[in-house]
Image (cartoon, rainbow over all chains, first blue to last red):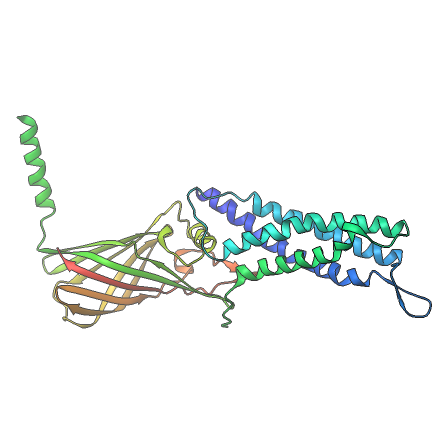
Length: 157
Length: 179
């Protein structure tokens, strides 16, 4: 039992660290998302992003997805303590995973669809046009999940 | 017939062993540990302690015990982490022993030498200040045990890579009744 608790704590510590690290490429990806648009000859914004912009945004998205997957692995496969009932902030933290989890699957898929459409010289349309919205909802749920386990914050040094 | 004789002998032996001038029974208790982190102030409460006091020759020996996993901080994840860092699966009980003179002032401050077994360690806290108040035939004892993580060789848990403070004072509020 003690060995199981030790393993659980170790896995959840890695989950916490990876979760915090994931916020960096995730934030960068949502910031570079709207930037993945190019300037026209007269300075106006055009809908066709440059390849470099798109590639950078896609790389950040890819890195976010990989780190997110690793973070989720350490939470999902941490040993469960038999008979332990969940109380407190962990319930909201888990509930929010049902929002950002599907969001983290949908966002790169929609991003890949949008990328294909861009590369084919098409204006992004259909489901792919929801890529940005889904990404923002996912980021909001992910941020709320982090805050939920840190709340209430009572600063005292 | 020989069984009955044996039973009587056992009863006589037990009554001799248990002979005491008087005794105390823990009626209700609240044990609260306080944990301090730059971002969080947490209190974990247990009301599951059991206790007894046996008095012999002017001294009362008290024993109070509570399961480690009954401390509730309002967050099951934190409580399981607490059980892990305090090696609660290996050492599931926190046990406190103390002796007090049978005759203490009816109310006011008393001082006790406490022996605390917790997380596989035994630590003595001498001259711990406790408050005693009497209401009816019940005696209420309150006070704070100045426990620390290092006393019990507990690695202070950390949040966002910042460990909690070493001090984990345990507030005690107990009501005793004579047996």
